[in-house]
Image (tube, one colour):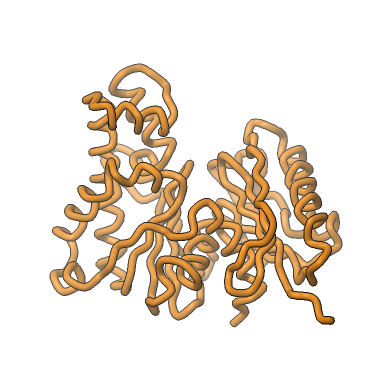
Length: 296
C-alpha cells in the first residue's frame, strides 16, 4: 500500500521556531512543535536546536512518505545559495549557509523560502485567500513582512528580496519601528518608560489605558500607510494580514482599514478585500511545506 506523501514544514521567526507534518492540501498531521528561537545564542547553537526539533518532528512521520523539509525563515535570504543574509532579527545567523547545513545534517532534500512568503503562500493556497488570483499579504510578528502571490506563485524579484518593506522610511525612522511586535513595545516604552510585551500592552489598551491605546492608534496608522502604497502599486484582488499580532486585531483593524482606503485609488478601495489570515499559528510552516506540493 502506497504511503501518503507529506513534507515537514518549519517556520523560523525572531521569537519562536515552529514545525509540523503537512500533507497535500495543507492538512496538518500530529501535533506541531514549538521552541523559542533564543536569538541571543550563537548561530551554531540555534541551528543545532533547530535540527533537534526537525528530527523530533520526523520521528512522528514514520507512517508517511516524507518528500523533504521546507523552511520558512525571516529574511532577507539568498535563496539560490540557501543562505541567510543580514537578518535584523537573527543577528548571530547573518550570512549563514542554512540550507547546506540542514541537508548535510538530515540527509534529506531541503527547500527554503522567506517566512512572509511562506505564510502568505499557505493563505493563498488553502486559507483566507484561496478564492483570489492575486493575494498581497502582510505578516505582523516580531517584525513586518510582505509578499505577493500571483496565481499560486510567489513573486521573488531579482534578488529574492521582493516584499522586504521593513526598511521603508516612515516618520523619523523605518516602517518596522512602527508596525511590528517590537514596535508596540518600543512605542509604549517611549510614552511611559515601561518595557512591556505586546500582549501586555494589548491587555492595557483593552482595559482603557490611554498610553496603550495611543500606541495601537500609531500602529494602525503605520499599517494603513504600508497598505496604501503597496496596494496602489500592486492592485491585488485581496490583502491578507497574518502573524502573531493579528490576535490583537480588535485594537487596530477597523482604524487601519478605514484609513488605508482613503489613500488608495477609488476603484481599488471599492473592490479590494482585506481579510485576517485563516490558518493561525500553523500558516508559516504549512507554507514552507507547500514548497514540495506547489512546484511550478
